[in-house]
Image (cartoon, rainbow, N blue to C red; front, side, top):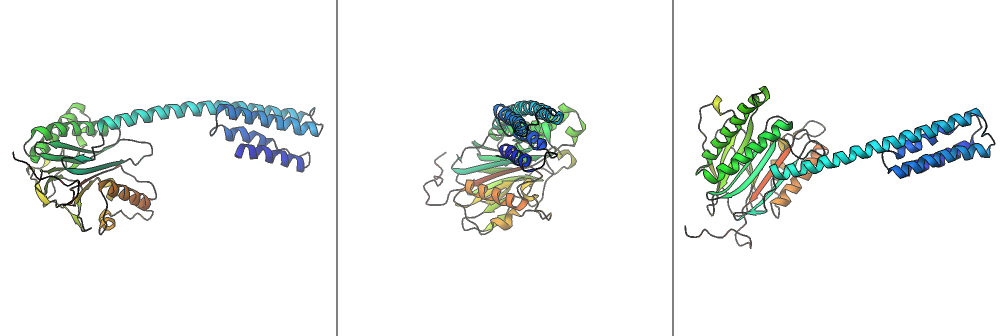
Length: 359
């Protein structure tokens, strides 16, 4: 309503003030206000209404022939023309942005597809929250795959931003999917990812590429075993939320170096086993969650908020967690955030995992 109110206000101002005062600035502002918010046609009608308002008021005052009238009229007409030009530029920019967003969404689905809700008898949920508005993909990654060795998954965070980080994400996920099917051990999958990322760094042959690294957690959940095996390569420790609301942190006995930094240390990867009882939910996240800050600079603590809470499923857990971190940070974060929740159905539930069959 603002453009119309400006014109009405201009008429009232001009009618109630002495002739030495002019409402031309208000008539001029009306089409400029309409330009970024309304269609080209509405902007045109607003400019015409402003022009008619100037002519009509001076006609009532019998001052159409005065020089100031022509000056005000030319000003309003000129600014209305500029408003139409601004409107057209903004519309074209909006169309290009919409096209870019469609392309970005398609790229995300291709590079970072959302996993199915049920894989290998487990309930799965994943979320990707970009720190920059309308940015759909960055350097965080997740993938889940059902393999002959059980359900295998990875959550990682590539150092850096931009196209280089997206390329590293694509390389890591592609290498993971191939290795998850072929490698007999989780350690072997980790080594394949390390080699793939090192090859990509040598191919690009830039300083940023050689300084890049990827923190990651790789996990394997064998069918019917009630355990999860993990390799942690410099990543935040996952959390385990049990059926009764008790929360545990799956800290590794010793943190390994991130992927692409394995040459700096000679310790081989060793997977650790943790219990995954019925009804428990495994939560793996990137540091965009734990490093989200509030207005006072206080970091978000997911464990403090999750402890004692019970959720119907992994999707509801992630939805509530994302909402809470947004409240904590005031709606904006400085880093992307990837979340993956894997729940083992509780005993007696309709969706509980069936017992393993004969080999």
